Image (tube, rainbow, N blue to C red; front, side, top):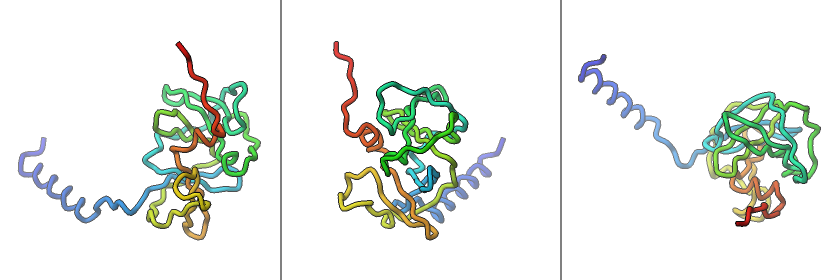
Length: 172
């Protein structure tokens, strides 16, 4: 067990490191993945986990963007195909999805991906709207190392997937 003096040194070192590497509010960590011929990203702080080879259970009467539901770490998540949100065309996904990205939040969503990449750090000012529809868009664009990356706004994924259809609610 470290004595009080060495404990103080550890705290001092951590404080010095925090001053050297402050959390910059102008930078954003993005989790990058691929689906189809496109490269997508979501804010890294919105990713709850990643799993491979999950077979989604198809739900009846769902929009094309909803691939089904999967269980990830005890949570049932609705899997969204990001390519449908962007292009309106679905990929031919294999029976078992190569990669499922579980997202945080009350909507209990996950994204289907063909492969996952490392996180990248981007300046917030580099992230641009994908269209003239200012802040209320589900997509934004960023260029990183000469590649265009589509940044998904997690807050609008479900509404985009459902194409603004209202969810059924139980009435009591």
